Length: 280
Image (cartoon, rainbow, N blue to C red; front, side, top):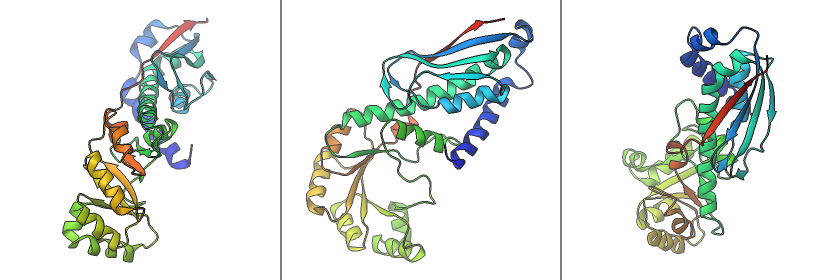
């Protein structure tokens, strides 16, 4: 995990535990004797891809750094079900961190699972599935890491690491050529992509020097026509309303990339549970 993702995780852990535990886990404090130790097991109960074990461990460890962990699954691999993570140590820490750890692990695993489903759906087309910026505020780097674990790729991380010139930029700048020229003048090295909705806009963008085009809300037939028209003069990315039911046809059009916001904004949490056994 890189430093930026680690900082994001540390902040998320602090917020998650503060909102859940507050000034104390009343039930655990009242019912579990001080000094009790326990062995817990997180189990995957539905098919999918596990990702986020380090994040889950961070939640537990923040309450007790002496907790011991046993990772029982390889992250990033599809499997049906089974044990995920063993946790042993202070019972109060395990019980109090349980919900926050499961919430985060289930969500990140859900994102990885969604990515894997889309990647599987376009197998053999030669296209790559990409995520978007439609992420949970405060969790972007973690969710984008989950996307990669599921076998898909990351689009730009934010507004700072690539140009994506869209219709509003084009309107305000005075056209595609003007927008591309202004961007190149500001930073000629930054990756640049132009959103196009028509063949005329495709031609304008290529003439302006754009090497990558975002084809927005085109049908598979329209995408195939643009692929033939461009004939390798620019990389092509399809985007807009792509679902699991349509992604294979979209990818088969010949585009190099298909971006799917649903991988992050609509991912269903993977079904996980935690069971615990008191040791003392």
